[in-house]
Length: 257
Image (cartoon, one colour):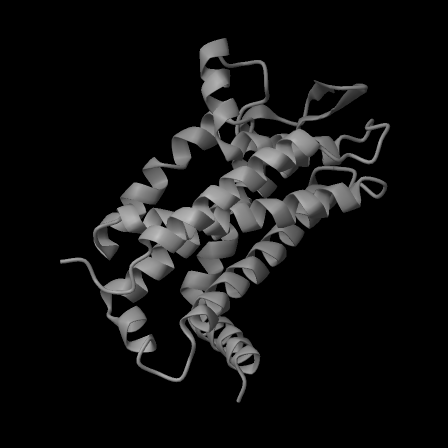
C-alpha cells in the first residue's frame, strides 16, 4: 500500500475514533454554538455600523464565532491531541511501524480540518436560521479562502506550540492561555473600536485578528468588491510559515522527561 493510501486510511481512522466518542464529539460542536447563543442573548440583535451601512450584531458574531471555530479546532484541538499522543508514546511507536510519520500527522490535520468545516457550516446555518444573518454569495470565495488560509496557519501553529508543552496535563492551560486572551482583543467577541489603541496594536501583531477581519469583510452584506483581504491573508500565511518552520525544527516525537 502506498503512502497516500495509508494517509487516507489514517484520516478514516481518526474520524471513526472521533465519532465513537459521542460525548467528546457533542461538546466539540456545542462549545462554539454556546458562545453564539450567549453573545446574542447578552447583546441582543441590534444594529451595528459596518463599512458601507448598517447590519445586525449577529452578522458580526457569526463571522467572529467562525474565527473561533478555526482557532478552536486548528490550534487548540490539534495541539492537545498531538501532545496526548506524544505522552502516550503513540508518536514514538508510529515511527517504528510501516505508517509514515507524515501520514499519521496528516490524518490528524485532515480530521481537524473536516471538523472545522462542519462546525463552521453549523455556525453559519444557525446564524441564518435563528438570527436573520445574510449568508454571503458574491464574497463566498473570499470567505472560503480566508478559512483555508486560517486553517493552515493555525494548524501549523498548533503543531509548533507542542514544543513548548511539557506534558498532556499542561496542554489545556498552555493553549488556552496563548489563545483565549487574544480572542477577546481580536474582534472575535467584541466589535472593533471598543478597545484602547495600544491593545488594538497588540492584536494586530497576532493572526487571530487578521482571520477575524478577513471573515468580517467577507460577511459584510455591503461589501462592494469580492471580499478578499490580501493584507490579512498575508499575515496569516506568514504566521503559518513561521509555525511550519518551528515545527520542523522543534517538533518532538518522544515523550518529554
